[in-house]
Image (cartoon, rainbow, N blue to C red):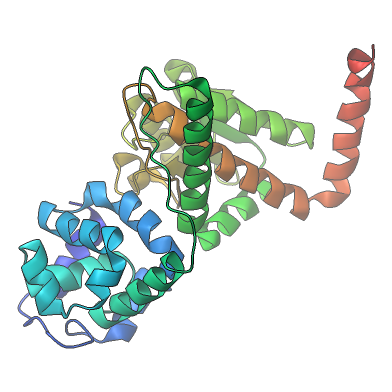
Amino acid sequence: MTRRVKEIFASDQGAPSSTGGTGGTGGPSAMVGTLGTPPAPAALAAKVRTLAPSMTRSMQRVAEAVAGDPAGCAALTVTGLAELTGTSEATVVRTARLLGYPGYRDLRLALAGLAAQQQSGRAPAITTDIAVDDPIADVVAKLAYDEQQTLADTAAGLDTVQLGAAVTALVAARRTDVYGVGASGLVAQDLTQKLLRIGLMAHAHSDPHLAVTNAVQLRAGDVAIAITHSGSTGDVIEPLRVAFERGATTVAITGRPDGPVTQYADHVLTTSTARESELRPAAMSSRTGQLLVVDCLFVGVAQRTYETAAPALSASYEALAHRHRP
């Protein structure tokens, strides 16, 4: 169970559940202060996909129900949704709060808005399950749709406050180390190459031993970024922990905001939860979301350092121009 889920359960200890619109005690303002601005209706499905793995099974049933049938659930009272999902009213309220809504009434309003969007004539989404005998044209269509969905989900769930804070740290950093292995290691290289092209000192480390020995040299004013979709990759967590203990500003790019890596992260940037199948490993989908976050970081830094970044980009382009001529 995640820290956020535990906090929500703790806040309800000893308090009777409410069957009314607010969905519990403590008042909406208290929950807004804890969870931030409620997500827009269009972001609800992405929020469910991101948080579902960290929920209890009963909360998952509620979350899956509201994401799968927003129109039907919007018509239900808190008691009705609890009966539909075989859970309790308290579980429905806690699920609404975990998804970012002050109470069940606010979740119902979001569901009604999402249902209205879905009924506005938009074509139904195609399935992304790829069969071994699918024609190549179908493979292209399914992969393109899934990549678009991953990007949309990541954008919808990305905390722009955390993103802005990470950009600020990168702009001021003496040095930036980025950790990632496997597919995440490729994303780490992409980020460092971009930062180097605008004149910033950055290193990508896929060797876990080298990552730790470099992390030991970091200090306050430096930045360390860990990229791990699962949030539990030990070879990435260890150097981030060392950097955190040395006083560097630490950032985690992960698909699991409840993962172990986040306990050593000053800023957490969440990517979309990957949809894995036999012919589409999770690394493919997670890489797409990670690259979007990396591009957002780079553009944010380039904006803040435009006076030096623009000439640096121009110089690097000119240095390689002769290699691209016939």
